[in-house]
Length: 107
Image (cartoon, rainbow, N blue to C red; front, side, top):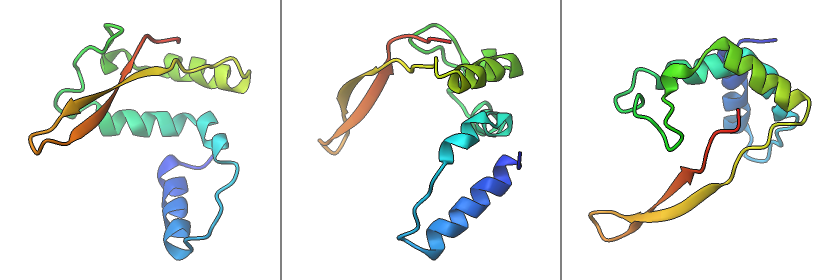
């Protein structure tokens, strides 16, 4: 499998070249561990990302074993993300910002 950065660069280039380009078979990237590791690397160092979620877990519990379990469940078609509760919180300008709150983790 190609590195996530390469795939994303190709997708970015295609989207800029043609607004009518139809992306297909993007789900295959969910089987690539590199995408999960790239996402983690983009998140873990940011302030506030070590705050526990509604399930009491932090991003600190992320590891390759978890990625492998997720990929296996996606391949076996047994992964079902839990719905989120949607609420809106007020902004300073008087508008509302949507906020999704996870009920719990399935993995």
